[in-house]
Length: 258
Image (cartoon, rainbow, N blue to C red; front, side):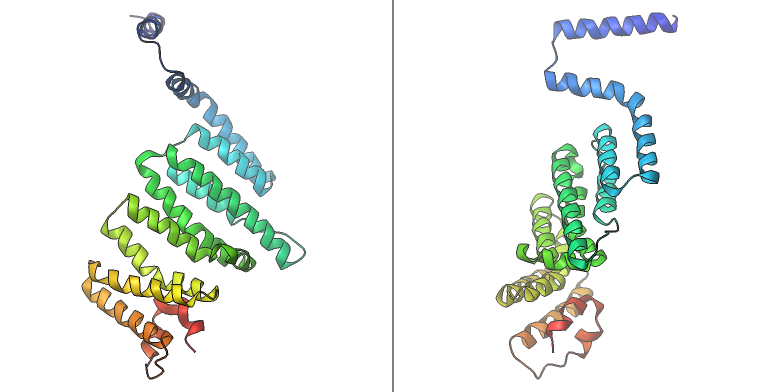
């Protein structure tokens, strides 16, 4: 059978199926997008590359979104393009202007990632992880951004919210441990926002979760450091913080342990 004849038979089958069971409009739109994707994707990639060479971060971000509309379940793409836009070098006369630019880009990247969550199915886990850690990474790139995020509780508190969603929606030891070991960074952010009671409560909750960590030797060592920090914050100045000060996991808390 010739290729031409095979094509005609295929079209006839599709037409017959559509007549017997008319497709829903949303299914038809998805089928159409699937058919045209191989033809349009190379052009979208080419435009993206051209913009990367000659365009600005905002134009590149818009081109990235065009590519992702053709690859709606590619979670690595969402993460890579969101990070690239949110962490792009900011230009400005002063730190305040650079901070405002960084904040606007971060908000746009986060909003786009939120829109992606229902599109990626079971891989929403990966998008939530990007949402959790992107604000903190962006603050390290542009320090002024950290101050601008304080009214929202800081980058660490934003991360904790997404980690709580991860723990709720994708329960498992790895997610729980990730949230447990993130406690020093969250507590430091709360202390920086003058929320001392909330910081202590977060450390106590993490201490309670340590018993479920799979590596119990690691958990006991880590819990001992958290306990020492808690006793210091409670006013016990007889505590020797030497081990805390040399533990890189406790580094975010050190400014409040003098």
